[in-house]
Length: 229
Image 1 (cartoon, rainbow, N blue to C red):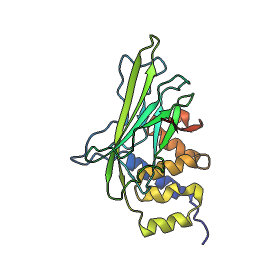
Image 2 (cartoon, rainbow, N blue to C red):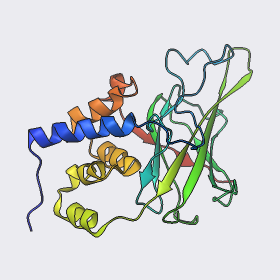
Image 3 (spheres, helix red, strand yellow):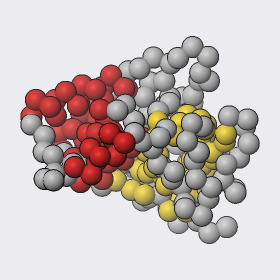
């Protein structure tokens, strides 16, 4: 069967759907996360108007069909060879660590959009389970003092329906973000769109605009590398 290609009107409706996912209100009883780290007077001089942000909906949640999903962030400053590593933790609903130990990650040299992938050596996420993640980075100010900035949020692994699996198989790789968006699966939508952002430049621009990050639409994206411990 030939790959499915998208008409302009359908692409526009997908952009609107992503916007609705982003603006979904938090269900009653959900734990609260923060998609944007709070500003403090002790932040480093490189941090200007934008602080550390997670590219997640307003409710700080979202779903994935992947056993090892990607997480996406905006990093407000770059690192050096002497920078402390960033830290990523993943907990289950009982606050137990899912990872064998927190991931220690090297920062790229420049600020921008970056992803974190859970290594396949860890336990996969379980279908029907919710997890809370925490991401922290440290900057050093002009006086040599450290400032920690952190964000946290939720992710739920869901089963991919037979219909979704079939539609993904029928869809050209560069447009596979669309079936995920149509099924309100946030993390996979963002990952597929980021991976194929050159072919979907306007859609990538629109996504970053939700976070006031459109200036990075043509910038490289980084995958944070895990440091050996």
